[in-house]
Structure formats: structure tokens, C-alpha cells
Length: 430
Image (cartoon, rainbow, N blue to C red; front, top):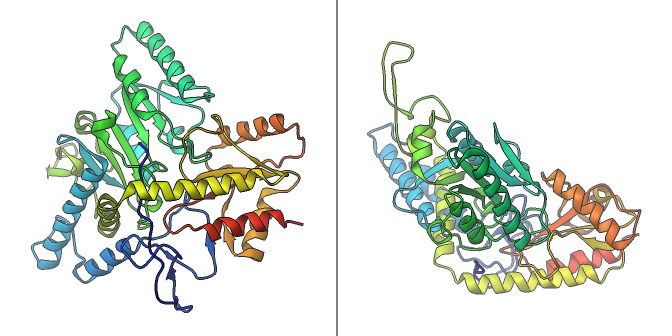
């Protein structure tokens, strides 16, 4: 679970200032990302820039854009083929098993809400308090929220104990789903997904992984990790065209009522109100005209990443991440937020605060004065971020930390110059 994306070559031509350009060091190849000259994008964790291959795939298909599954003309037939090929490509990228469903959604939040709607009656969901809101809020009925663990090992022990207690209380008869992140959107820290899956299955539970932040940085293999469901977002994965995916076991999804009721989710509709035969498979939960361009763009990025040297990409990103973290640590007023110890594996995300400075104003100054874009706030993970802010204040013995944090995130297209510009700007804050 520690691989990556290819180092890109610097373009031999100067960017045209009149149009968006590919980021320096991202190169003109398929995995080069688009950007604005002079601007530093350190907000990949919110929305990653568009990969050239995604833009090209959309441009190529646009003249043929037509109805998916709903026409006999050339445009419709080509669009339908492109959509279903995209489904196969994304499934292969995720290591989906032959009998898994790959369902296109809007994003990870939508995918996890779909799964929440598909849970069998009486299912208990076990999750951790450090999750993104997308993996905290959708779950209905019985929910067990475990405290934020201090380490990967502590997460495993806490889950084992919680599932053991649930099993005793229910005699192992009620369904249980464990819902966890693959990599934190606040700290970038990677969670022990394969080991958590082993614990879950030992207790007869299933496991769903919010892989929104993991998939852009680390190869995923549903079968190898032995997880039951994975949710991802295209806009985190260099395909910002409004598509996401829920991939995983078919039985709960086929047994559940359709996520949306409408055309495409049925095989037959009669005159009577309840005379409806719902489709099985992905179509059951994809009613309405699908996001063809989003699916095709996401598949194009997945295919490009599959053929890339992800080990080299990972090494490049980790070197930039180490430079960023060591540079922040050298600034006396800057404190990094973390859940696990400082050496824990992580992807290219760092959250921090500047003591005595309001995070929103710092972010505004960085953007206005230095052309640096990053995120400020609580990152749709309010319980975790507030806790980490309190812990950072305690560790540092400070009482002047702001109530929100800053987050710098990197990926394809990020450079040493980007990192150094941020560090220099932070060092020069008035």
C-alpha cells in the first residue's frame, strides 16, 4: 500500500499566459495537470487539478455525446459503449472482484449515502470519530462511534474489542458494517486498511473504505485488501467532472430499494402504482441520464495511472512531503496537527496552525500576496480537527492557537518551488 504516480517532465515550451497551463514539472504528458501560470495550488485534497488525459478524453467524446442506454443512433451507441468501458476500467483500477458492482455516483459522499441506504435492516455501523463527515453522517439506525485512536495498532485493538462486544450482545446474528477512512483528509495519515478488514471479517462484519484521499496517492486493490466496499471521488483523482464510484459486493446492493427511482433503474413499469420491476446490478442505483463525461474522464485517469510508474511517483511525492513537513517544523510559530506519531505513513496532506494568527486571514494573505492556494477551516471533519487543535495546544503549551487550521496538500504537478514558496511566505508573515 505504498506506491504512486510518475515524475513528470518539464515542458520544453513556455506556457501561454492567456490560457491555463500545465503545472511546472507536471509535463505535457497524459498525467500532466492543468493550472494557472504563477499560481501555486496546494489544495489537492479538496479538488485536484484536471489531468491532461481527462480533459483530452472529454474533448474527444464531446462530438459523439449522446444518451447512454437510450438510443439506437451512432452517438448513443458510442456513448453507451464509452460509459460501460469506463465502468470496467475503473473497476480494474480498484481491483474489483468479478462479481462486485461498480456504481457511478456524484462523489464519495454520494457513494457512502448510497451504501447507507442499501444496508440490511438492523445493521450496526462501527466507525471512528476521526472520519470525514461523509463517513460520519449518512449512517442510520444503530451506530457505534469509536474514539480517535493514538496509533494504527490502537485502532485495531479498539475495533476488535467493539466488534467482540457487539457479537456477544447480538449473538452474531445482526449485520455489522465497519466504515473507515483509508487516509485522513486532515492529517494525511494512512490507516491499516488490510488489518482492519481482517479484524472485521473475523467477527463476521463487512468493511467499507472511504478512499477519497487514498486513491489519488496509493494503488487500491479491493480483492487484495479483502475489503467489501470502496468509495472514491473523481474530483480528488484529477478528473473534476462530477463523478464518483461505489464499488463492492452485490448482494446488499441488489436487495436494497433503488437509490433513485426513475428511468433506467427499472426493467418494466405497469399501470398500477406498485407494478414496477427494478433492475439488478449497477443500473438499479443509476436512475436518470448518467454523468457520461465524468465517468469517461475518471476512467481515463485510472487507465493512465495504471500504466504509470507509481512507485516512482510515490517516492517523488514523499520527498516533497518530507520537505514540506521539515520546513514547517523549522518555523517556531507553526504547529502540525497529527493523530498518530510523527513517523506514521501518510499521503501528501499536512494540516497546521500559525500560533497567534487567524487561519482564515493567513489563507487570504497567502492567496492575495503570494498566489498560494490552500485550505483553511475544519475540513469537513469537525470533531477530529477540533480535537487535534486542542492536543496541539497542549503539546506546545500554547494558549493562542486559532479555532481553525490550515491545510496544504500536494500531488501530481506539485514541485519543490511550490513547497518553498509556501515556507518562505509563512516565514515572512507580519
